[in-house]
Length: 534
Image 1 (cartoon, rainbow, N blue to C red):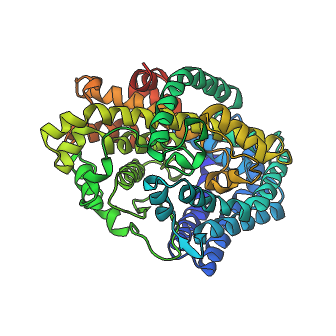
Image 2: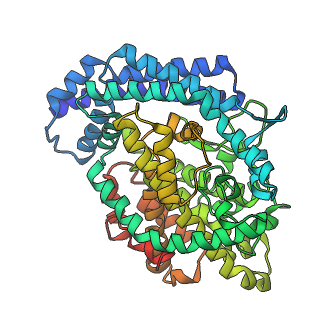
């Protein structure tokens, strides 16, 4: 069996690695250009890659080897991951092609969409600026409503995709796509339901207290009664980030800064250089370009790139630290590992690293050492910086409750009243009021619902792990108190710890085994609670 699998692996890597690189490059190029022909090329290559994993003969060989112990840790681990990759594609090829093509169509619609108000088109950045800065309720409502129009454009296709994804899952013996996606990523519904129920219990009361504080601030700011506050008053299209209710204006510290240079200097200072990745990345706005941000490992051989749309503000500083957190993880995976293990232990472990660094944008010690804030100013803003981060975290935690529970229910029955489902969850977990009489597919305006299903809960798992790593680095690596808000600037031992304990192992261990090896414990919520709730 060992010889049989080793022979399979050689053929597998020869077939997959080159096509994987071509598909990643094509997608990266398409997300920059926004051109239909570029998206068509990316779709064609992605389809070819998916079809490799749908090969019935290959899967039959894997089925014959299932359950075998190859007497080698790396071979056993490769088999688990490759088997799951193939299993997830063992459904009708025509259905696979239809899913890829429809997904590409929806993705292009998101990429080229520009909200329109009174005949003028607005980018996402421009809408964010209105929601952030305006105190005119009518203007805020217009901007918020315009941002949701993409949902009306894509919602029918997203429901179709849900049915198609569910049909594929049922062909593989799963109840629905959501259940299948968890299983194939070494997770399960029962454990996640328990975790999110615990998080709800953990954060509900403190969030309710903070929500009241938010409402008092926003009511005064917008000159409306508390009971008249609506979703467009909360300074974010989805209320997934905490409003700026504290006196510290983090944007002002970045408005004259070179965000790219700050990012480079920080990562280089902790021994994780990013110069080569910066050179290949696309970091600034251009017509037709995807308006969000992501990191991509083009070839698992060091060609790692980031796409951003940088503006000199707090949000984009955090985003750059976040995305290059992903990037250093990808770059520094042990290149001697087998190709299929040359990636993060799990999607949420790379999110954890991204979040660990992204949080630093509001860290007062980081601001002093990297941006040049004075000691006096640092002391003045320290409390508000922490309170802002805490509010951001708890607000995000409640938002993820909506996303996780919505997707879980949506895939269990895509034909239910999805608009009502969305707002019921928003009202329960985010404590926002639904606009009176509103019956629109606002849920479909969130790109993750449309294109990255059964993924969003991993952001919350990433936040838990980010806190666990923060305490581990502070107290076990640096021997300092985490409550002092260390920022790790120029501490090369931080980069060394992450390199050896988290990055280099790649996917050679299951995610919880990697976490236990790196921190001494399996994934736990107690450090998140210790940092943001206690």
